[in-house]
Length: 339
Image 1 (cartoon, rainbow, N blue to C red):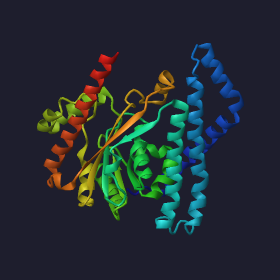
Image 2: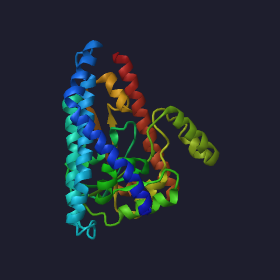
Image 3: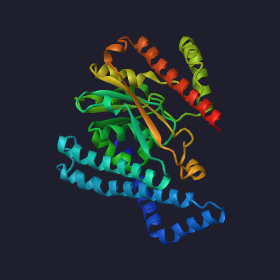
């Protein structure tokens, strides 16, 4: 998707100084803010220091983001002052930084939040067996990085379909664009499809194309609103998805665009357990340290088993979502029995 340079730099004129300023505040204020967080926790009888842990986790995030801001112009200069930003060497340089940042945050989640990540089914993703299209549900701010983290650790080159709202984060804005990811508008379908098609160009056997078909975080009112809207536009599909309780109806446009653009790509489903109650940063304060692993389960679908025509593909995607929803319901029932 093309964006006017004037709009891009107006946004960056706000986002970059804001992030750098916030980072300076948290770093310089560390000798005061961290003890204050510890005292706050102790006064409230929270001996495992959730406020202090979350403070240090956020501190790591903003330091990573600021490092990306500082290195972005250096990488731009190394890429012939922007003339070869799309070259393999430039993309590899940016990918190393992007992957380091994600790995660092995952390590801090383990160390500070007691929230390790475990993967089941990684044997299905041998490097060089792609390209693949990775799809997953979007239940938390923290699950957006899971496919990239897992695929990168397995040696894949990851490109993601990211909602344009995340351009407000300058790290995403400056680095992720250069690694082949695209930022799509929420309500401009044709522009989103064009961006997705451009992202898929040149995908090779080591490329994973990541998309979250729901397009936004799960919320019950959002689910109800989307199902009601679907009942007006496509009653048959609305009836098919009426039993969804824990997931949003998937939006098939971007998924179909990827299937069309990469006709030999298998599909990999990323499902996860452990993040449904951690939708926002504030949720961490109630449960940190978590003490339970995030479990990522991978399932690979051979392309030959996915329908060719779009209506049948959409029905296939809907069934995948219904199966995930049923699994989530079963998990909740099991948790209720254990309690």
